[in-house]
Amino acid sequence: MPVKSTGAKAKRMPRAVREQQMLDAAVQTFGQRGYRAASMDEIAELAGVSKPLVYLYLNSKEELFTACIRREAAALVAAVREGVEGAAAGPRRPADQQLWAGLTAFFTHTAEHPDGWAVLHQQARTHGEPFAAEVAAMRDEIAAFVTGLIGEAARDAHQDPALAGRDVSGLAQALVGAAESLAQWANETPGVSAKEAAATLMNFAWTGLGGLMDGRRWSPPR
Image 1 (cartoon, one colour):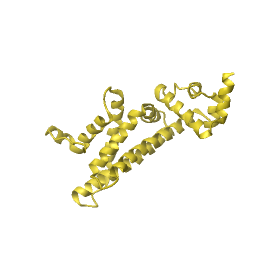
Image 2 (tube, one colour):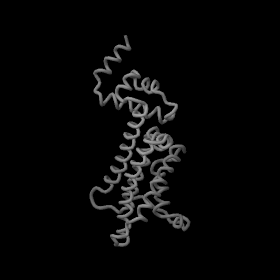
Image 3 (tube, one colour):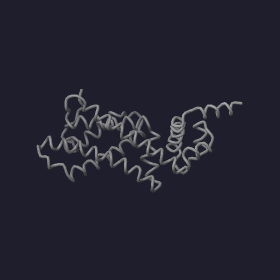
Image 4 (cartoon, one colour):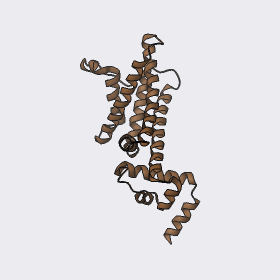
């Protein structure tokens, strides 16, 4: 029978692969239906496995949701780091170009993984601990990374190694918060590309409202 055949395949599939398949289904379900409305039956059906197998691998709905948050957070942080480090390869590039690369990577990832972004930005934050703490840890890691970029830009501009401090950390927090809100807006607004969202934030953060009012804009490297 087809059901037995599916079960046989499930047993032969490596555990890590099967678990990722379940997480894929869970992220899609949580992202589109919300944590409360999502059911383990839905997730199991979408993953093509039995509900007992989901519980065997991931114990509970809470642990499954936590695993989804951790996976999506790690993927987002890795994408941003890869974007910046790729831009920094070879001759040292200005900090604004590295920031541009990181923002472009951020908006590209959130656009390509809307369900994962919904899990991180909407679902995890609204259902209390420990879910909110998982997202806060991700946010702190990205903010620390951005703090380094802004601090480097400040030192380059003023040749003052002591300049990077509380103000720079505050600017990084503001930039990360703006990026999160802009990513949500971009995902909900048809036709907004990742580069357009990144350019919007670069103009706001790097050029500033005063510069924009004077007709000055930041331009990405060719």
